[in-house]
Image 1 (cartoon, rainbow, N blue to C red):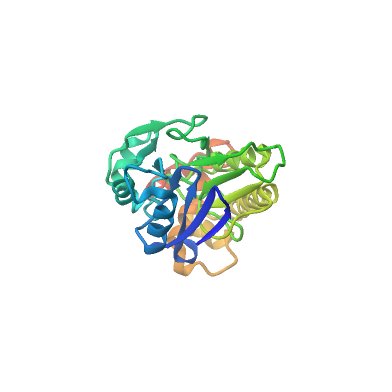
Image 2 (cartoon, rainbow, N blue to C red; image 1 turned 120 degrees about the vertical axis):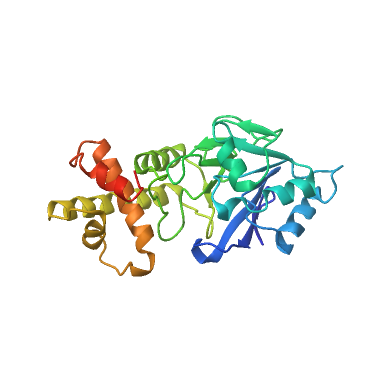
Length: 278
């Protein structure tokens, strides 16, 4: 367990997915429990420390997720039951939330709104997933050292974030990174790995990584690659044999963006459909 200040507590929760490092960060962000991936003793203790072991004194007012992927939602129902907190889902994506979390939300929120009766703001950050949001505290842009954005799978301190077709939208992801970079948060609190102390540099690094990969995809197509697997072979220098399905889905997200922008032949749309990645 680690806490950056009195209002933010991070708990690493082991998950049985491809999550980086095998863990997902759950956060207690003011009165909101964000991304409880699984019930653990450490997270139970952190929740109880906030006064939420007792339904009559709910130190946790709401349970929310950045997006409805399995490694972020596994214990939403359990902690809602433990605390009596309000379960919150993103407006317009309730069915997706229910399918993943196994519980109906008590209320929905939209970007720009606050969560339940807290000061935690909902920030629109689609791209990694269509329902992806982040949760902000403090006033970004004031350089007070107190603003933070719990950003889920928008950013990581090292490496990169998967943006994989069919649900990953690369154009939306890049736009989300640009908005967060320009907002001026003091810290990013990612879904995996340590806190990010220089959000602008991290966002720029991730944008550059995606644009570099885009250039590799275009070069592979220009060199004659005629299907997704051939593009994967041309666009990646490293061995991706152990994660080829993810590499293919990532390339497909790049191809979908390039088709939408009119930068490659529209015939590629049918090639995406062949793999169920359109």
